[in-house]
Length: 182
Image (cartoon, rainbow, N blue to C red):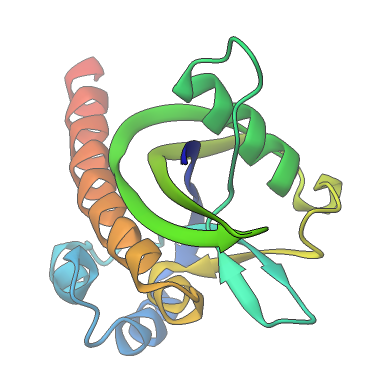
């Protein structure tokens, strides 16, 4: 049986004092995405943003995952992602970009399901992680490198790597746009 769901990588930008920069550099050593060279591109200013990722988890099983869920009748895949992420994280988000999909199979009640999950890059613009539903008992923010270490499933780590690439390009475009407005 085929099934699909949608969700995404939820990020926020948080100011970081330049004195914290060396700590961030040490934390991101060895990260295989854009953050490995991040320290070279950050100017030595009083503050610059760091990226944090929201993950959902279950304390009893130790699972950490990206928020996602199944469609309700008549929803588009984008609507599923926005609704499910808001329910599972308590955050209001806006869609930035499509990231990609992962596929896997599982058996439930002696039926084999082939599932495809479509992931989107989503920016947190409101809400609060304390407002999440009961599907997961934990929602926390992590720096990208820590989120990669915490995620239980490698296919979601791969999605996070892709999301980081997309996010870095989006941030560069936003910086260019802001410079053009000055």
